[in-house]
Image 1 (tube, rainbow, N blue to C red):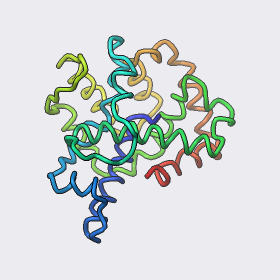
Image 2 (spheres, rainbow, N blue to C red; image 1 turned 60 degrees about the horizontal axis):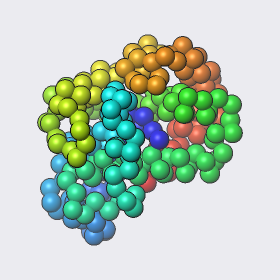
Image 3 (cartoon, rainbow, N blue to C red; image 1 turned 45 degrees about the vertical axis):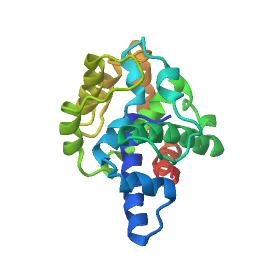
Length: 220
């Protein structure tokens, strides 16, 4: 699984690949349908960071948000832009774990602690500058369109999630902003000091940094 900044960087790369394929006349049928049906890129990105909303509401389960689409692939036929982004999030979670397991990343010290959260947040920090228009994302997340799902999520929770993300993404993550972000998350808020300490240690490990930097190049 990835954290939120990483998911947006992955989405950016995917949308750019669609544009390039369209220019070359090489769009796959399933992606061609999405593009020709006027894929809304903003709503795709909104969906791409939606599933982890469960972190701020204990009533929302992982099954609710992460077991919605099968098989997990890049076929978005029949989906809305938001649903396509949602499915893309789950696909990237699967691909990221496959990449890291193949590279035996989790055999490195501390990488598997707290469900891999320190590594995920460090990845956010490393690749933040791969996206060049965070101001637009932040403004959009501060006032997103409300999109109904088949999950019992209140409007208040929906808007709160994107407000938290907007604040988190205002600038490149630091230990302070990571701490504020984690303080809002169920399951992590009580372990802030330990997670911050691990991030600081991992930040000095060149091998870990190299693995995390390369995920974005292999994810698609």
